[in-house]
Length: 70
Image (cartoon, rainbow, N blue to C red; front, side, top):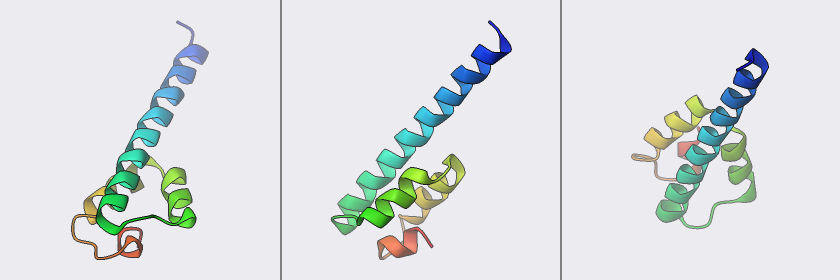
């Protein structure tokens, strides 16, 4: 497989992982805090994988959506 195709596949895999992590975090936020604002949804959907993992840990002790994304 060419390096172009490999890079393309890797990029697709990373985007899929990010989208899945964002979806899980949004679901956790809604379960814990209720409806999530459009602004918070946008921040979550635009975050990279590392930040999403950090927020996914922070939700365990946060008292508000803002504390999660702080």
